[in-house]
Length: 245
Image (cartoon, rainbow, N blue to C red):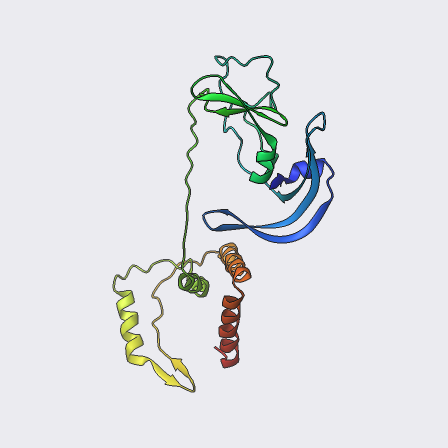
């Protein structure tokens, strides 16, 4: 379960320091530094449950993404709504897990139409289903997922120094470099020695610190879940250091 940092601060909840990586989407990870333990209850305290929340900067975007049109929706007055402004675009303050959710949910359902209904819960009736938006959203969203192999990740890590170099206009530059490499490579004093050509012209290097830091953090998270891989990686780097590479 997760809670919005601003809400936990405004409620004055006692925080506990932790360091926990949490999967958020398609193999991506987020480092959680704080958690709180508290109780959630309804107004008459007929429902009271102790829960533990992980504190994050933001749970999600506005939900719903924009205010919905309820002018043509007949909501009975006898339904005590858990959120009377459910149709307005608002921040999500807390996200509960499935085990708590099904304790909160009750069996009764009130159907408004084929696409929209209310479900009874410990906190009141919850709006469910589909409503028409007031206007078509102009916001476009794009999602990216990556599934790099370990070899690709290590290669990217060691290639960071090469990031930001602009391409040389000479089309056969790579072929020339490979030809020089094949002609000059030799094994000398327990290491390989090779000649490589200098670029005839080059642009300025971009600042890759933030990108390098992010990739290093992602790699470190993988190590935290695979101690054996961490030891293998550590052995390779230590061997490089001992050989002066």
